[in-house]
Length: 360
Image 1: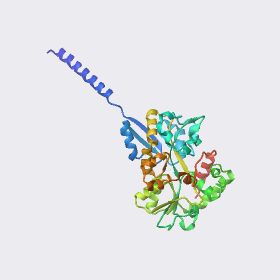
Image 2: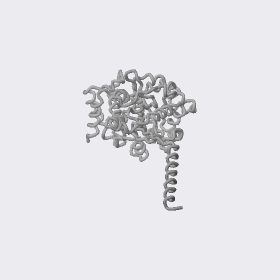
Image 3: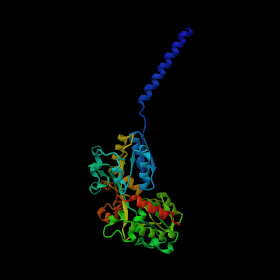
């Protein structure tokens, strides 16, 4: 075989190899990715891994420290970086109104009809006759306490201001701490909705109430893990937290207690939304459907100890678990919780909160 023939043969062989490589690449399913911006506990491998396997995808999550953190990222041009978000009931309405989320085609979510009618009927994620989110989990901001310090559950938030707990209290770096101070001043009576519509005069009084609390504050936590660590290191004896931290501390065998004092508690309804800028909307729909299914909801409660929006999750629970999540009488439990609402003067609330934090 002469050199010319060898060269032709080599070219043909190279062409065949390139064609085979292209064919192989086209046969291999490309792994999609789904990006979440959610609260802690909502992307745990315990339930996310099964979704990744079923849909041949990778789920990545960033966690937000507050509702304002979420809104700032969405409005700051980062909306396209995330496919699914989990806004709470204080900002869900504004996100819907601002078209930062996709109006949902509910026919693509067969499990939507199983969700609590009371939660589905709320106007929080509805705008112009369209629905922009699905209820996911709900719960209170309870009082957490070290049971070795408190022989019985504290019956009032007033203990936060007790001088004997100087430097031993933690509150959330969030507007919900303003709501708590407003409760202590009686602004939730007769209408708890007033907590989210405080006047300038009321906000000034709330500021003074929180300034009086500052000597008792060891740290304002911004992530759930921070508060968990504060308890484990015995830096605090009480704080406003989430059931997630109670669950984490129980698993660490820490003597933690959780209660809703006589003044009641504020709380939240978390929703799942698809961002309007999501580049993976089909996969995002599949994720929402998976996350609101009864069996997944049970798995989420195992991690977070939050109450599921899908009551059918109870079929996978023991009687003790159902009682612990208040699924045996959710309406009575809801009466103890002043669910967050849209705050029309949110910028003013943020201004007051920043002044409290900046004060010595």
